[in-house]
Image 1: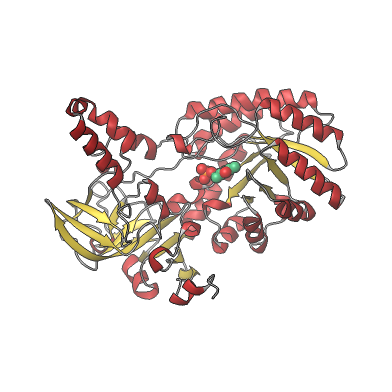
Image 2: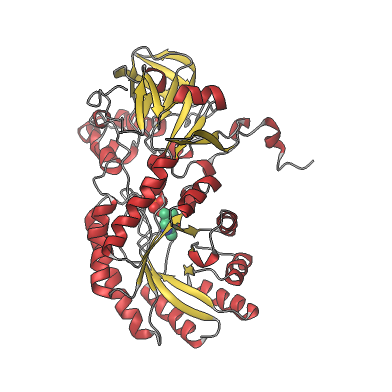
Length: 483
Ligand SMILES: *Cc1c(COP(=O)(O)O)cnc(C)c1O
């Protein structure tokens, strides 16, 4: 196996390697997976899933044994993935009746689940309360009222955890922040005071079991976690004074970051903000010291700490393989068209960065500047930011003085590098691997433009590959139409 790690910083021991110039994932050749299962194809690593689960459990429980990790299933609710995590000892977080259903099918017990959502429906509440869900993370006063009605009807006690707004700006970009009252999530402390009063008045139907906060996604500043810990310590103490019984848990949410910058050299070419958002040195060990440890020290061994990591559990567990189907030359650069666009990898639509490696020429140096596009009939279906680039050029044309502030404009308006580096011999039929695509991908696929959702396989260091999601067929396009 090739060891040119310095030239190829995307390589990771065992997980992503190369042999005879071909990319391997967990020892399985990417091109042979395409030959067997077709393109485009998601490839999940079972080994990596298990490593992540073990990593967070060991690190967090070292500081606080009474810690429960609820995988946020909206990040990847594939049955095979859910089952692997269950086998590793994780609990699960669900965001809808549908995710609750899938988690039940995967074998999770309702008592091991927490249920989030800003607009839970009466039917969903009935299902989860009847099943005895571990906690409903309540998002509004109107929801407490609704739960009271449903629980009274069912003659069952519902277990409530109130989601507080800590007024902390987590999340590297504005749209990634969920911990302030300008976002749509959570309750203010005033609203919570009213909710707690209502809960205490109806002990047969309602029990307050915890406090919850979730401040953003890809939160990559350790000071924000320290602030969250301090806020929750104070807030839990405050709530305990209002309750006639002890609180069972404090739920810190998720949002933990992962690196999307396997190849550092590519990042030096794009705006600085770009690297800030996608590169992080924060790992579970550091989170354990700065978030879990202070809470455990202040609130004691009795209280259970719950976390709800999604992205950080799965993003680095999968790659997407996609074939080059067309090529043209524009200005000085080639444009390559992949068979996967935003209908397969939705996050590129709003400018998320995924690093690319040519799986067919894995050891060739990646120095050729290319534009990369998807197959859909939509200008936004590109692996560069056509809207942002257009906005910057028209602003500069209208007001040349703004040239002095070009980098500020790009910081606000452009969210993807305009060029990718690939090997000089890159050509038709090559397989391109997009790295770190494991989160928020499978469930976000659509059939836009009559395109079929991609298949997914799981690879295992010992056992090779197995299908975990079938490729959609033409007939699937008729699934929902009625004539
Ligand atoms: C989405 C979500 C999570 C998971 O967030 P990640 O950024 O994927 O870790 C956790 N808790 C709640 C309430 C969520 O909405």
